[in-house]
Length: 222
Image: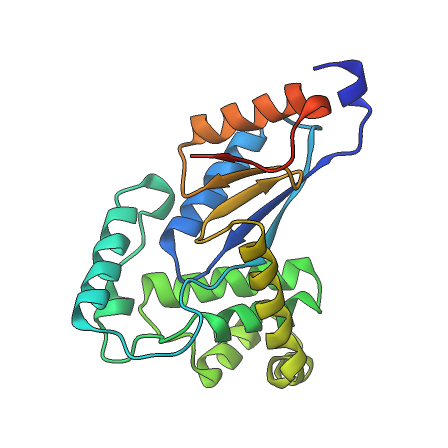
């Protein structure tokens, strides 16, 4: 790594994700593993909302079967071994990702550790136990178990501005060319779409680190 890069500000890393997507969980864990080999070059991984189901609508049987298949496929990966397909085979699946992402935005107001705790709780409840985390009562119970100040959380969850922020981030990501999650943006210049292997994430991070000073704007890696 060049001296110029070594003394530069850490590069931002933003993963656009949906807590109801098992592949976003896989991507996050693989990126964190890859980052262990490029210490000092990048800042902490930031997670931002990208709902895979934006507006609430009933799902067809074919859609639910496809989501269940995706969950079973993800469960074959070591990073998601506990994942089940119960969420999409239950009689009460979430019709949109917006409530869960709004809850995470509300939790962020209480600090990154509380947000991380709630994200873990939402993923475990939905992806492992098959609970509908689009329901407010479920989100409130998960927030309490995650150690959040429930009064503050409930107020932020109900505030229209919290959901508006989630939608604004989604619109901004869409403007950057992001069409699905997971999607990793490196330094606001490179876009890595879809889940990748640890080796692929490590390679692209190392390539960015070595080429950072002469990059063209937003390069998409397919």
